[in-house]
Length: 199
Image (cartoon, rainbow, N blue to C red):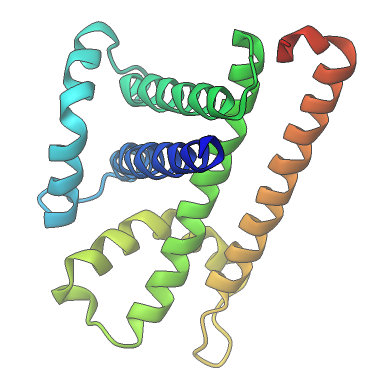
């Protein structure tokens, strides 16, 4: 019974925190690319994420065009998620290790958001007119900053735009690099400071 409760708890933590972190992250990225926030999907993200963000923005102002309140919220949510996961699994982690464990998933999630946004844009471009679909409009806003430079390097060949394939490969390599770096940091932490993991 205890095993079932732990697994159920892990499922709930991963699902609820994962969905909310994704909502905050997508809102943050859409702000960075200056997407149209009158878009219905963008309005939904604003409504869902405003409750914690608005109070944070009173304490943490934006700087250099970056919404630092969103960054702090993302990191805090990931830290809480990792702490609860460790608790359910019977681990005791200190603050430094929680920070290390929280950065890698956020970096991975950011890369996967761009990766799946490009894939969704490619698929929808075959069936949905860009001007009429709010989701397609956001996908274009989100992915064009990555695809435009790739088109300059590899122009369309015979009318076929290869930039999505190139960028998706680069993103996959970036995910592999982030995971490798995170694994190396974790191994160093285990060897040099096993007390980070607690008992």
